[in-house]
Structures are given as structure tokens and as C-alpha cells.
Length: 299
Image 1 (cartoon, rainbow, N blue to C red):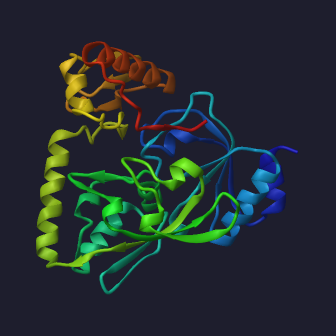
Image 2 (cartoon, helix red, strand yellow):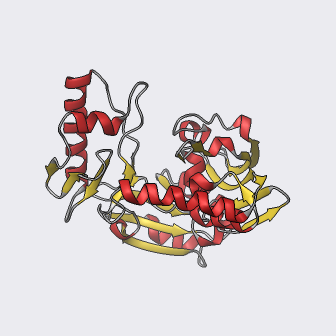
């Protein structure tokens, strides 16, 4: 029985989409369709859905806001499980902020500001979800998630719901226990600090001005294409290799920020991957540095 039909039968109330175009689900605005896209409404439904898909031997992929992923042109087999608004609850208690995995990271940062809680200013301009931010230990302008994560509730690969402290999350540069071992982030608690909302807001505005002045926010992309190497900066090396504006099909190294690859119009996944390969080759030849992709490809 096709996976879509099986899930329809097993989960009559589950929000399901068949052959869902992923270009409208991801910030790169490209890629093929998902065989099945499912939007569970509760932790229990999510856990049962994952168990069912795994028992069928089908692959599954967890999708948040789709801001750091690249979808193959041929699409995605199996189930794409979207952690969305039903996992988007936000709240504060004292100096702690709790956020569901489906909440926008920027919305959580605004709530923290309004509650007079500092420490999340760096996250305001990051376009992903809280779950995605935990998964990759997102960061910007000197701050990152591991600076503020107190604990995370998750669905472990064995199907059990557990809670881990920040120290148990193996958070490193753009990685975590979830990136290494699997599992689904459900919610996160963040330890912040009291500060005047006006002060927090001013700093958030300052960071937003920096971001908008230096990054191609008006073009579809998945953010920084490559991780920061051990020495130097990827964008500086790409620029130094004379690659700004380099184009393959509809994909282009941004002329505004060399660390971004943008969809300049009609780009395919193959265009982006070929352009990334050319950038890696040129940087390796000029600087002897192997750039590692930051973008995750759904396979």
C-alpha cells in the first residue's frame, strides 16, 4: 500500500499532503515534491506517526521553517514531517523562556524582549524555527543557542520522550546530539537575564541593521552556504577567490555577501550543488581549505 494511503488509514485526522511541492515550503524556493508531507498536531500524534513510518521501512525527515535545507529536484521519498504552529507555544516564567519547536526563533526573541529578558538578541534576525535552531546550534553576532539553552524535550530515536539538560546536548559549532544521533526536538527552555526592554530592543535593532545591510535578504537562499572553517571566514575566502557573482543556471554566489548562494531565478537543486562544488574547488586551490556545507540536503 502506498505510504500516503497507509497513513490516511492509520491517522484519519492527521493533516496529510500527497506529492507536496517543497519549493513553497523551503526558503530556497526550489526542489521537487515530497511523497508525503504530514503535519502532526500533538506530541503523541508525532510519536505514533514516526513509529508507523519506521515500521513500514520508509524514510522520514523533520522540517521546521525550511530555512537551512536544500530539496533534491527529484523530490523526497518517504514522509516529510512538518513541525509547525501546533508546536509553537511560547511562555515565560521568571528569567526562563519556554518555546515549542515550531515557534519562529525571531518570535521567541521578541517575546523575550517584551518580557524584559536579555540574551536572545542574536536570534532575532535568524529566520528558522526554535527546533531547527536547537538542531544546528544556530548563532549569529557572537551569540548561539548553547549560550542560553537550559533544557530540551525531545522524541528520541527509540520513540521515547525525554528531556536533556543543555550540558547533555553535545552542542558545538552548527551541531548537536540531534544532528549526530537523530531525534525530534519538541520544545526548549532558555535561561535568560533581566534587562530593560528598551535596551534589548535597541540592540536587536542594531543587529538587524547590520544583517540587512550585509546580507541578500531579498533573495531566496538558505542562509550561509558553508560553515566557518577552523581558520578565517568562508565568505572572505570566497570573495578573495573572485567568486562573487559566479553563476550556475539560476544559482549565484551573492554579490552582496559571498557566503550566501541565492536563487537568482529558476534555480534548481542541481544548480546550487554544482555551484557549491565549484566554490569548494576554487577555495581549496587558492587557500588549501576544505569548506564544509552548512545547508542540509533532504535525501
